[in-house]
Length: 216
Image (cartoon, rainbow, N blue to C red; front, side, top):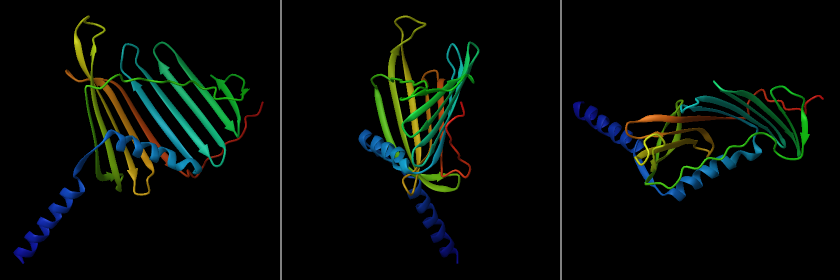
């Protein structure tokens, strides 16, 4: 009996070790998996919510909700708040027609995307590491992909002083290949100070999702 218990304990420990094993992958593998996951559900109704927090000189919180109703409807809402300013952008897309407004003003019709867009650059990396592992998210079996990047920049406060910054990016993919969550964090490495954090949550075929053209 004792031998059986020991054998079962060993097998369980081995299984857990295999399950949680972290495997290093290439940068190409990482981004191919990410793009495959976010592009896969184009024909599925979904809701994507994002919360971005910035902790710099002028801290802010930006929350967005991006909803897609198959086959050709979309609603995008972005709410920004800081000590200096605040705004709310709304966009509704019906086919190839866009309707936009800011801070509750009148809706304006457009033939192209008319909400704000932000493009960020991390600069050249000093070190890069990409990994994947099998784990759990909300009691669901998933694969967790992680990227850890560092780069050196000259401090804006101490002229000439070089500091190391980090960027951690991770996303969870279910067994069907759908992305469920993404988390990104950027900041100074030593001493560690978080500069920016973003969390993205994906929901597929939400029960209540109706998108109509706005009433003028």
